[in-house]
Length: 107
Image (cartoon, rainbow, N blue to C red):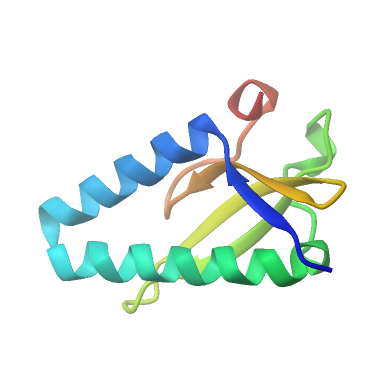
């Protein structure tokens, strides 16, 4: 099955903030991070339903899944998303050291 992937507003804000933070420290690192994120989007398009539930899922009102992606330096990031029919909605992006989300974070 092929999914259509959409970023919700909070995810777009997360993406911009993470990219800008990385860009201030390393332009090549920020570009590499964005490429890793783009590869994740392609993975979600082809098999979003194969990803596991997020570890916060039990505390949330909706079924939230998570997908991991990492930078060249090995820093791991998470994309939190839901699936509705054939659409994937990315709710949030989480970077290293960021805590779990709650219902307010993903509404």
